[in-house]
Amino acid sequence: MDMSLVLALLAVVCALIAMGFGIRIANDLHSRGLQANPLFTRWMIFRYLAVYRRVTLKETGQVGWLYHGCSTAAALAAVLALAAILTRFL
Image (cartoon, rainbow, N blue to C red; front, side):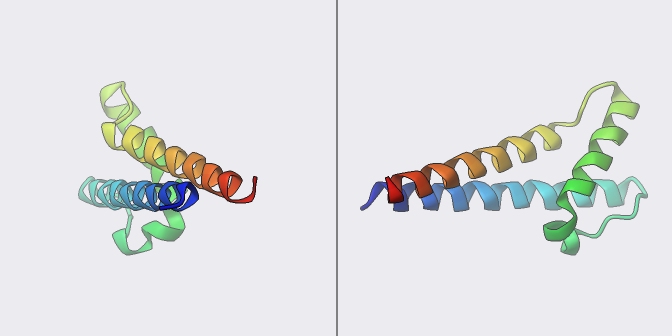
């Protein structure tokens, strides 16, 4: 299997994990009484991340663990996608 294909598949897996964290964040915000729809997570993930970060920081003094998981998975997906593109064309 080609290295770029492996990296691309890992990027897709990380993106799906980030989407799962985004859905959990939307559900958490909804359970706290804030307006958040898990079906719109794909389009509004950055807004939900910012709101979740602000709410958890205000409540507990620390950022919630879902924020860290989602941002880490999304950043890893971006790095892996870039690596897949670079290995494909270089």
